[in-house]
Image (cartoon, rainbow, N blue to C red; front, side):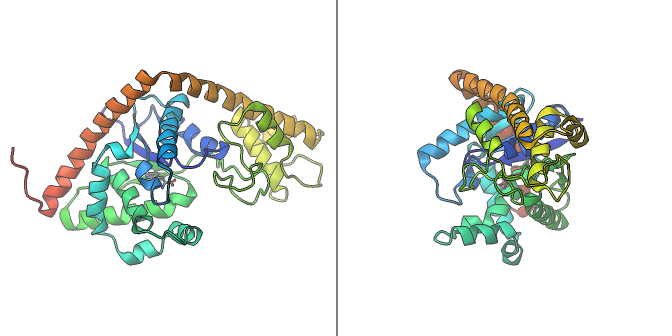
Length: 334
Ligand code: TRP
């Protein structure tokens, strides 16, 4: 890794089926950053077990996600693409940071409140301290920037608070990370309820386009997308369904919303939905093909997993040893 570049950290959970929203809103933007920064793109499997997982499914999904990072265009030679669970420093630093985080701070996290309402039968301590593990992920690599969605901003703020508190006591140990908010808000909404974000866990299968949906399914979901009775294709809040389809089309084709509106001036919703479906297929089909090709190359993916875990381990250990020394843990005897 080259030293004059800044460091970027981000991660995704391997739970649920990733949607077009995850791709357009996160992964695709990561690809534009992967030359400019020294990047760590982590599959955060340790975060996943705050909710019960089936072991075989978790293992498969984690590998699929790691492969998808590469299929999407993240270069595993230049960036570190790895599993959180392969680098023990995440859990070790999380423990330490737990002792510098207040119950009151964690109680205010809206994601904790939402998730504990949703999984009332399993409100475990990990769900509560989830943001501390996320802080450890970021601080372990001295990340300067963290691309996150709005829903993770509160966790990033907490990360900054923890880091500042720690630095206040022990001197400059951690880099204070900044959020990186993507340029255009490619926030993709549900196709069935355009006021809601497109989600991996939506019960209505027509609400989300999954990254692995085949072309017919994609086309069918686009055709069924909820619109309105206005009958004009305009980019405005009064037409949230059409606005969302314009955003999808625009993100898939690189055209601006204004250009899309001009292109479909005077045309019907039916035509437009077909065009949106085709645009989505033109983006997802190559991604799926590349994913399938890479998945077959077991030796290559294994080598990426091994090399990148070693690389991540090196940087993680550097920070961890510094932290341990600062707080007074005994030196190792060689
Ligand atoms: N909590 C994030 C999410 O659910 C995933 C995540 C874990 C993450 N660690 C991170 C994101 C560090 C950015 C940086 O989306």
